[in-house]
Image 1 (tube, rainbow, N blue to C red):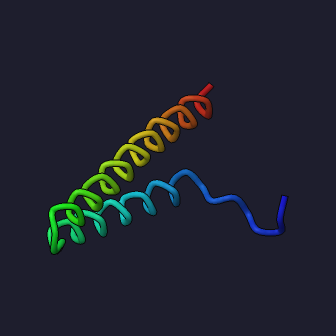
Image 2: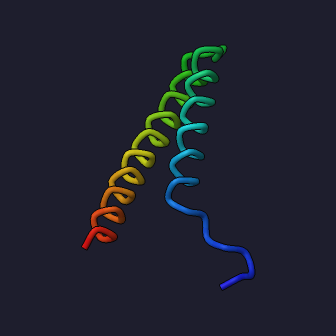
Length: 66
């Protein structure tokens, strides 16, 4: 492992939320349908990853309660 700490689940979730918002804004400002579609797809992927990170955080909380 490197000297840097691994990012926490919370940090990863926030990063995905920010990425999703940036891609949604880019999709709204897209010049072509292809450009807009690409950004929409990236935003959807970021939303999916954020959801999975939320599920991971919930599992971590439950494991901590045990």
